[in-house]
Image: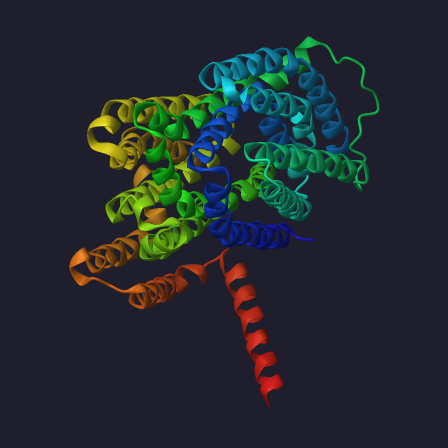
Length: 506
């Protein structure tokens, strides 16, 4: 199976999964608020957010392993090199526990001190996350080997099991404990299936010996990961707004924020999925030394990311108020201005992630992390200063300000230097997209003004019309290489469906 076909199929599964999450999520969130209470729902949002910091103990081992396996997979001595990497990663995985256990104790004590009545739930969650932590290495290996289809199917299966378990236990009256059991059961199933897939892989991935390789090769593989690990802290800062809102405002503000941004947080993952899924391909092309092809791929990835981000912006901004109102009530909607600027922050950060993630493939681990750290610190400091005075709207303002002041200027400069192009040429990658996006969004923002008093059917019609116009304006971009491969494949599949429909009607 070709690289492009692997990516295409995995993206279909990934986006299908996210659509499934959206559909079920609209029912699940009000179901949980009603059955476990608004207070417990807010507590779960904060606890699950803080537990993400356990990822710091990864020390960047899995991220670097996935990238390095993809690079080695494009060489002649791939089998021996990959086996050596996996052996080193196994030993590093053991050493990770030295960091993980104290970190887990610290997090659990922090949570228990604030919520002593949830001690048993917190301890169960923390212990479960520690037990399943080492199995991350298998996912990194399979991702590096571009086994993207399996990983996409696994993601859907784990989510399905988690959701079913949550619903059944909540109905049975187990409250917040239901979400804990669902979370851990999902991790258990995922770990078992990852090990199973690894053992049946067609290449001989198992190291011939698990003998300690010595400190030098371990250190060589660990150092780049330490900066990626610092990146995990950066990511934790980026997603700490829920914790800050809970600390600086109140639980009701947390619920309003979560409900208003629920759809945004789900669709936000679509462009990131495209970028992350493309990492092994970019790494392999970089390993081949074909600079011209690499520039074309990077430019096409940036365009595809922004076209997708713009489409999501239009759809969500058109319908978010209607959806939240029907979903959990208008009292839990933060307003159109908040939605608009949150979506704008999302789109700008998609662009910055495309640049920074491309630099990651070029081994800019240290600089990427330092850039992200500066960006996230500015973001968190801004929220801490302004959220009490200006409310929730200050969150997207701070996000936009920090990414424009820090990440985009620096990453554009570094990417231009690496690809031997000017900064102007890098920014021109998205010019064919950006003017069309700005034009449509400004018109849409004007029409969404309260003076027009659009009803439900008019908002749906507005969303469909602007989405269609947007797609038609972007077709010329998709006809360019290498995006044309996906465009014509999708076009042919759609034509086949239409022909089959006509045949059945006749």
